[in-house]
Image (tube, rainbow, N blue to C red; front, side, top):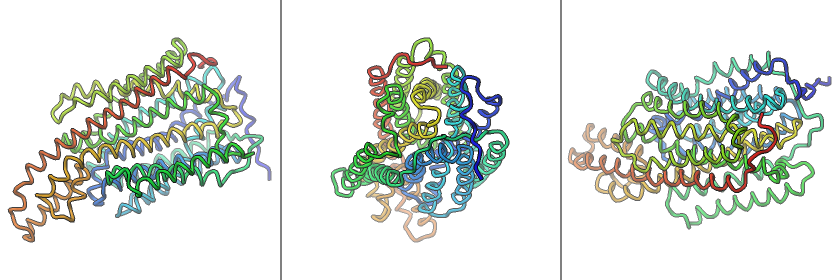
Length: 525
């Protein structure tokens, strides 16, 4: 039986229920976005309870993003071929089921695998939401719709950490994943009732080899970066082999895609200045954002000693800044052009990240609130106009694939941001702590103790428990207080280095945007 597709909803008039559809789509997207921000608040608790290393915790984040990025090509093409609504619903179901698994695990590796499953669900959801927006809104309203879609990233930044803090205050860390279930159920029902079906009338065939190569290449490169940060031996075979092999696979992927009649990645999109410059700006933002969130989360809890709820509240200025700026960004881009709006957003974001270089353990909260507000405002001035600009180059019939390409590159950049800046943070901390832990912990515990400030605290708790049980003499605790002070100083120093790297990358991105992004394109609305 042939299924009737929505006739690529007349872009001139738009769908009569388009604003209700947008509400359903952003609700579906919100659960995906919240999952990342809610998890940042729980990193310290999860690492402690599962006795996980810093590298394992990075993989809890990166496994999700790598699968998300690697399979988004396929998800976009599947949506264009079989129906965007269908793939959206299936993605929500997969995300919900794997959320339950993640909540019930007791070891780091199963959590990493469950997070990878959640990444698969997210990969099926996100490109469909933007693709459907492209198809149900007319040209003059599309910029505003994308701005609202983008602003929900800011809402997630606020809701995620605060709700995460509340959950951790009253429940176990698995509740961070179980909270997804009611939202998933509401989202599935709403999508089935409200969202129309649409698809590409002339879909291209799938490219399984391209999908495998792209995923393997990204995994290889990011694994090498994480391994380098973990060991601080960047020239070793354990680091160079996966990194270079991953890069070679990605080059092979690009070579094959150029010669494929049905490529997984439409490389011709990158010849378009609007698409390539918009995607570049989004990628730079994601790199600095995801990498910066790693040290921010640890700062509030490990350095300042705040509980998860209080730490989560400090995400509010970021969210407020982003929501306000995103709401204004379409008008700014129309008045001052894409180039000025996006470049100024990246510059503001970069300066606010560099502002962390003077942050100490007792820095005024007011200063931190201001730079957090500016950080959010910078992101808000990038996400909506850069997304709108990039999607202008994509035909409506191929909007699923186009959205997938845009989001894939952005998610790859986010994964690399976590890995690279997480490695910088870990390497800086380890450099100051390797010798310090030798006089306090037994040899078997020194590696984990020197790897992160959470690792230091976890090994200290074990040592105290051993003293209390009588298996270790009381004298073993003699240098523990001094070690804690050293750990605080080491983390702050490593955070300063990481903030310079994150902010510097955003500032370089702003300069590149000035050079390559067109000032004006088609009407933003």
